[in-house]
Image (cartoon, rainbow, N blue to C red; front, side, top):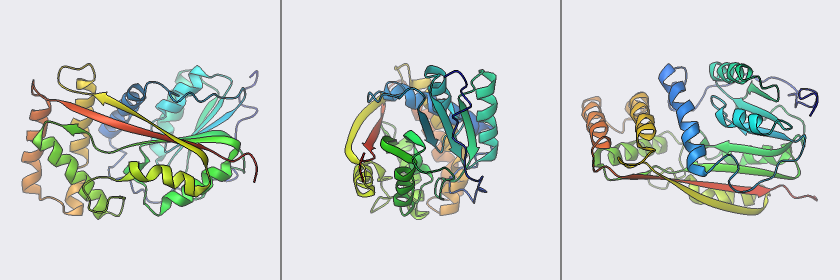
Amino acid sequence: MSEPQANRPVPEAQPAATDSTYPIDAEQADELARLIQQDRLITEAMGGLFPEGQTLPEGGCILDLACGPGGWATEVAFHYPSVEVVGIDINPSIVEYANTYARSRGLTNVQFQIMNIMQPLAFPDATFDLINGRSLFSFMLPEAWPRLLAECLRLLKPGGVIRLTETEFGLTTSPATERYFSLIAAALKQAGQSFSPDGRHVGITPVLPRLLRRAGFTDVRLRASAADWSSDSPLHYPSFKDMFILFEVIKPFLLKTGVISREELEPLYQQAVAEMQAEDFCAISTLITVWGQKPTTA
C-alpha cells in the first residue's frame, strides 16, 4: 500500500472511557511491564500471530480489542505492511504507550485509540476484515459479551472473521499457586465478572463458541494450544515473572472482594513465589482460540 494512512479507519467520534472493570490498576509501571511480557508469551504459546491459518486481504483492516500495550497489533502491522491495524483500549496511558512504541518502530499502518469495548464502538459498519481479542475475560461482564459480539458483527465486512483467545487458570504442582488461582477465580465471581457457576474457574472457555454462534457468526471453530512453564522449561522464567507480578498487583482486588484476609494473603504470596521457583515445579497453561465468520449474505 503506497500511502498506508489513506485508507485508515477513522472513528465517527472519540468516546470518553468509562470506569474500568479491570481488576488491576493498569497505571502501575509493573503492570504495564507485565502486560508487555504477557503479550509475547501468549503469542509464543499460540504458535504465532495467526496459527489458525487466517489469510489477510491486501489492503485489509484489522481491529484489536482491548489491545493493552499493543504488542500483537504492532507485530501484525510490522509483518503485514499492506494491512491497516487499529487497536483500542480503555486506558489512556496504555494507548499513549502503544502509539509511541509503534512510532518508534517507524510503523505508519497501525494506530491506537481510547475506547471501552463494553460500549458501542465508534466505527462505521463493515469497516474491518478481521477482529481480534485476547484475554478479555479479565474485565468483561457476562452480560456485556452479547453486546460486544453484536458490535463485532456490525463492524465486520461480509465474510470477515472474529477470533478470540481466552484461558482458564493454569495447572501446577504448587499448592500455594493453585490456591492463589482459586482466589482470583473466586474474586472475579464475587465481582460479577465470571461465567463460572461456583467461582472455581473463570468459565469463559466452554461458553465462548456458543456465544459466537448465538451472535450470528457461522463456521465457528476452535483451536487449543498449551505452554509448559515447568522449572526446567524455556518458558519458566518469563512465565514465573508474569505470575510474580500478577500475584502482587492483584492483591488489592482480592482484599476488596473479601475472598481472603490481609493476614493470610502475604504468607500465601510468599509461599507461591517460593514454590514456583522450586526445582520440581511443574506447570502448564492452556489457551482456546475460537473464531467464526460474518455471513456473506443477510
